[in-house]
Amino acid sequence: MRVTTTWGAGDYPLMAERLQPVAVRAVDAAGMRSGDRVLDVATGTGNAALRAAELGAEVIGVDFERTLLDVAKTRARESGVGAWWELAEATALPVPDRWANVIISVFGVMYSPAHDQAAHELSRCVTTEGRIVLAAWTPGSFMPAMGQALASFLPPPPPRMDGPPSRWGDPSVLDDLFTPNGLHVCSHSTGSLTLTFENATVATDFLVITSGHVMAEREGLAEQGRWEDMRAAMHRLVDSRSEHDNDQLRIELEFLLATIGHD
Image 1 (tube, rainbow, N blue to C red):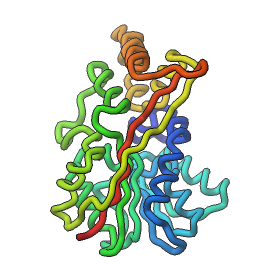
Image 2 (cartoon, helix red, strand yellow):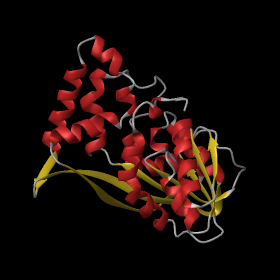
Image 3 (cartoon, rainbow, N blue to C red):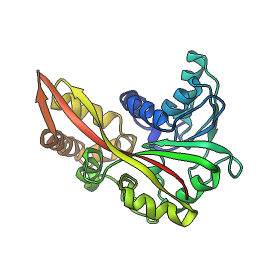
């Protein structure tokens, strides 16, 4: 498989398996019905798209990383459900205006560098009576904190980045993004996904190997003698943000689940 972005540089499918429950919650929140036209933006390995297809929806899953789409296609084939898979950016979605009754993005569109443009594109694609359901990490939660802990070891974000991805985990920011397009946040709630590990070292290993943007820098950091320093920074974060319970280490990943619709 040919990796086209850093999302394909690590073993992200391992993380995607852990994120499946949030995809189920997002699809349930969308009130999916058989025959709905569903667009799953930044589908990754297809968690939400496959769930929607199982419920009888007509589904298109879009992602800009080819290797993740290949995993999604394999999962669809093995589970016997039908869906279309398209290689595309969140800012240039391959569907006509007002095509989708439901648009879903689970920890996906939030990583687009052009937030206003991505929000405009989602708004373009949803029907007047349709809804957009987004799951995003909340500001200050574990995943944004991980980004901050590793920032000094990784390349800077794109110069045209509109802000941190966790902006999408703030309902007031979502309103600012979607109001110019005639949509608003209709409802939102905060949830938590628990990751469990044997200990902090196992947790650190998992978080490193599933982060493509980290694994993409491994050779360079090793040459600089900084790879183990990066791992130590991750280990400190895990130690500071985890709890121990019955010989297990637990990390809580807080997220916002928001439904967006037209005025």
